Image (cartoon, rainbow over all chains, first blue to last red; front, top):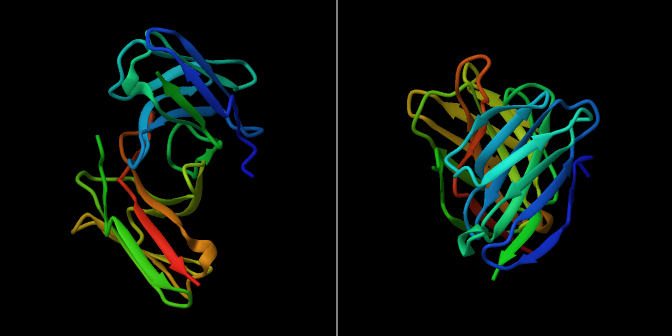
Length: 114
Length: 114
């Protein structure tokens, strides 16, 4: 167990709806990153938050947005869901602002859009 | 986009044999990390090798890095059935202060037969 928890573990949504995924980072970690993993693929970077500020973003549209709270927990929000948004969403926390050290991943949220 | 590409995509071996997985990447890096993922769950960090290192060991794991060829290999010695999982390499690049996200390859599915 990494100490990073994500909720919910599974979710089914209808196309066009909005979804919020949550992540509690490991104690003491000030950086949270979100990744999308499609079936059979490697994770793709969505964005990163460092001390409550967005600190980098991958190639994802603005309907993917996030927040980081003072306790360093984080949310990923996706608006206007599309079928292709069906994936495993992974949250990773780390101590530094980036990948200079190892990242600790949660177990993921499996999102299915129908 | 995927930075690294793992080779082979799938590998099946007998328990006790060694498993070697390769990773190639495209751009200059700060470090390269290997992660393991069981059945679509969270990723577990295995080992990190910095760009100025050539080889690193951790238990039954041995990682090499050749920055001139932009490639890395992961060797698992004396494999066990419990090593069955997907293995991903991930590179970290970018200047100080940037997000330095993990950029993953597409993974190698390792099956260790008892």
